[in-house]
Image (cartoon, rainbow, N blue to C red):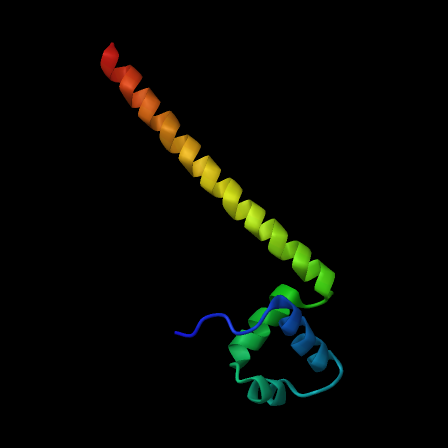
Length: 88
């Protein structure tokens, strides 16, 4: 499986090409992507500007970090409860 090939900025440019009237199948051939990928991008990035995509990326990164912190704290909490329960 190949890694990421397109940045969000490039994806938005590709979607805008579609909005200007170029056929979706032609866009898929030009950039070497499947129609499924194109429509997935369109549902995620459709109507966005580049600045919106950059903000979305920052928010996704922050959300990923926060989820990791919550998982770590939940595990710590469970371990402490288990230890306290065994002492009594």
